[in-house]
Length: 293
Image 1: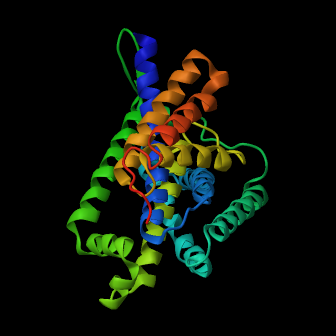
Image 2: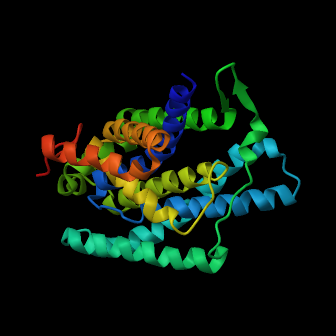
């Protein structure tokens, strides 16, 4: 029973972080039709910057209890990199998907060098700072409160994104632009402004996810590639462009990963991609995806 609960909680925590990155990826593709390989680099950037931000905050006497909001703030502050990167991507919006993949992969390589130059090649961590919030313990298991807070934050983000897209004027403009860009432009929508806002929001989701994970895992040069692989597994399972698919796909990948690690760690990635292959064979558009026109 204890092992089962640990797998569920660990898998759900990983799914919460994974959802934030996948949601940004889905949002950018849904509106801009860009498959953004650099989402993993945004995640890694958030992790590195979050560690630095909390380090400086601690040096100025900020309470350790503010670690969680401090990490969220560090992720949000990195949103400033979104607009200039989006302007660079404008050159490939109407070109073949291969150009988009090459350009966003080039960003991954560039960010790798930035991480190595600024933070060095050695992993960095916050030394289990998440335990400042304590743990909830029973006779059979215990779980850090920090993990539960991150899960709650991901649920809140999912609810907020759903409300934003469905109930706000700008959300309706985003959906209209995603459905028919030419018609939206004809009706007076500033598509460039919409694209810039969407890409910035997707960037913030990725950087915030990276910042939130560093109390439980070290930031390293490999994390960008490792996480983008999982993010695309989520997209394939859930369906490209579907926010509901991002949520369900993240939960599936998180739980499969946690169960594989507990049962036989060597098949962690294999277990995820067995499910990916099954989805591609049985439902190529994903669980909630729609066929592309």
